[in-house]
Image 1 (cartoon, rainbow, N blue to C red):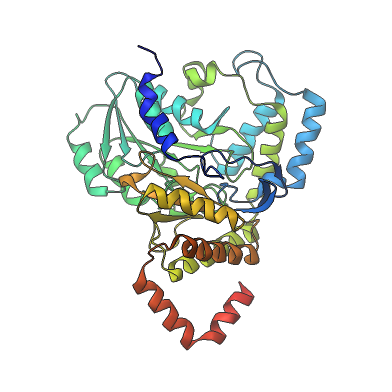
Image 2: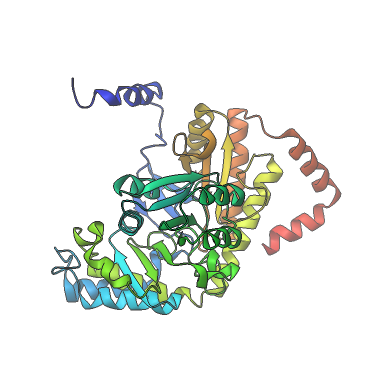
Length: 424
């Protein structure tokens, strides 16, 4: 038997998609024009699915820092952090993270995926328990598979189910509850205050992944835990540089007095080449600027309100009833609708992510939009027009009740609507 035979169902599924272009699962950015636009297939496209939440990929200071580091330290380290792969920049990056979060210890990983993989699989060992949300990111699931701990899942964002499962565990056992500030598919938030309270009552330690909330949640952008005032109850904070920071890499922070020993126990940290100096330098620059990026945060939230409200008025079924994050998920019924809408949107000049089972919760087919502080109000309006045109092209059945309500509202107050569009 061929080792690749097990992938025949996936090959058949890809074949059923035919040769229709563009291929939603094989989009190529031919040229990046800015944080919000790219050339795809010879056409200028608005990017509404890049996770570039704070628009930092073209930040002048971050680019200049990367260039300087490239000249001074070369293209890479060719070694892991515990061998030759720790340069002064890596220590400076960890210090920048500690300053940003106000915490005592930081470890930087080569990717955000590795941060979860390394921390969870190392913290919880044989005889310990890891308790995760059912909608956890793939990196969390893979960390559980890599480790030796017993793993339990609780219903998504259910405080009651978490409490029930924790009560079944031996009181004296070591327990790690893994949560996310914002979940990446639907963009919904975790009720961290209540979940953490239940975890602590059961004697568990808590790890919170703030990958999709760093930069824009909380007074200084540290995430949902900061916004809810529960940072002091979180034992480990994990995050990534590939979203709001605008580059690549991952990290974990903690105030635990024994934290530094993990550098010599965490295999994904010990056996992976460290981040290139240019990436490190750009990350330091971005992190330092995020703390005071109040205007950017306000602009981002204004963009999201505009998109969420506009799609809702058009009659689309959204992943969240109200705005919870810069992720706006449009829920569709079939894979044909999903890929058809993605292609139609590209032809209208807009790129969004496609997400489908088994990656999505409850088997949903999602057009996953993620806006950034770099988008203008005009770009958001153009995204809305593209969704309207694409839905018309596909004759997509939208929520008639919402559309009727929207039409009635617009008829009653055209002047107010026009004023809102003008001011953003």
